[in-house]
Length: 439
Image (cartoon, rainbow, N blue to C red; front, side, top):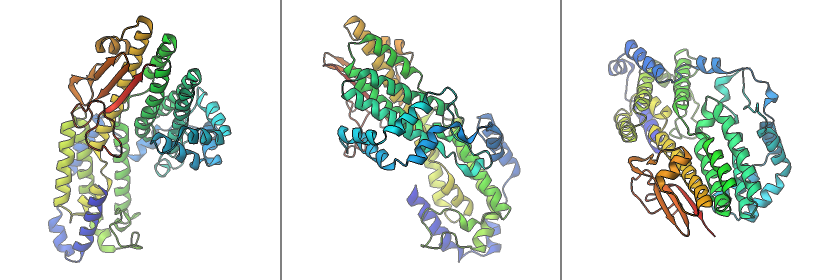
C-alpha cells in the first residue's frame, strides 16, 4: 500500500509537466451529482457516517476529568514499560522482565484499577474539535487493557489464578467500556486486546483445569468481550475524506499539502503547487465518488470475504491504471485497506470463539472428567461451531488426555495443525489457536 502510494504520487508529479490545463479538463469530465447522491444514500442505508457534522453531533457532554485513566497514562509516561510488555507479548522478553516493568508501574496500575472499576468510565473527548482530535484515547485505552492482560498472564504463570482472573476481569472491563463508544477507538483495539486476553485466559485455564467454578467465571467473562463491527470505522473514513475534499474545494487546504506517503522529495511535502491545487479542486467530486463507491461496495458485501477481497484487488488495479488522475491519487491515499479490515474482524471472531469453546469445554471436563464434543462445548459457550474463515467447516477441536487445542484455519483456508503465526511462519498458519494443557 505504502509503495503504491509513493509510485502514484511520483507518477502524478512527473505527469504534471506534461499536462496542460485545457487538456486536463477534457481528460477529467465533471462528476455526476446524482451518482454521488446515490452513493451517499447507500452509505446511509448501511449505517455509515457520511459527514463530519454527524460525528460531532453524536458526541455527548463529557468533562475533561471523566477519564482518570488517560491522565494517569499521560502524566506517568510509561512508554518504556509498555515497550517491555510488548516485547514480552512477542517472546522477546522474559516474564521476569515483564514483572519488573509492572513493578515500575505499580502506582500507575493502581490508577488503572481505580479507573477501570468505575461504572461511568468513559474516554476523554475533545468537544470543541471532534475532527482534529482523532479520538486521542485509542492508544491509551489499548495500553490499559494490555497492562491488565499482561499482568493476568504473569499471575497465571506464578500460580496465582484468582489474581489472574481478577486482572482479566479488569481488562474485559476496559474493553467493554471502550466498545460502548461508537467510533474508531474500540474497532481497531479489539483484535489486539482480545488476543492478549485470550493468552491470559489460556494460561489461567491450564492452571485451573480442575476448578469448575473458576472456569465457569472465566467462560462468563469471555462471553462479555465484544466481537467488533468496523462499519463505524469506515464511516469515519468517509467523513474524514469528505471533510478533506471540502476544505480543498473551499481553498482552505491545498492539494499539494496532502500526505503523499513519502513520494515527494525531502522538504517539499508541504510546498505549494498551484497547478496541483487546481487539479485537485477540479477533481474533488470525482475523488469523493471513487472513494465512497469502494467503501459502500465493501460494506454491502461485508459478510462475503472473498468478494471483499476481489473488490479491493479490482480497486488496486483501477487506481494503478489511473495514476495520472488526481482523483485516483486521492483515493489511493485515503482508501483504507478494506480487505484487511474484513480479515481482522474474522480473526477477532475466531480468537474469541476459540477461547469461549475451549473454556466451556474445560469447565465441562472439570465437572464430568471427560471432554465434551465440539457441538456440546459450543452450545455451552453460546457460540456457533462454524469457522469464521470458512463457514462450511467447523472450528478445529482436538481433545486428548494431555489437553485441548481449538483453532480456525485462518485466511489461507488450510488446516496447518494449529501452527501459530510468527516471524518464521508468515503464510501457512492458523488463527485463534487456543490450547489448554493439563498437568
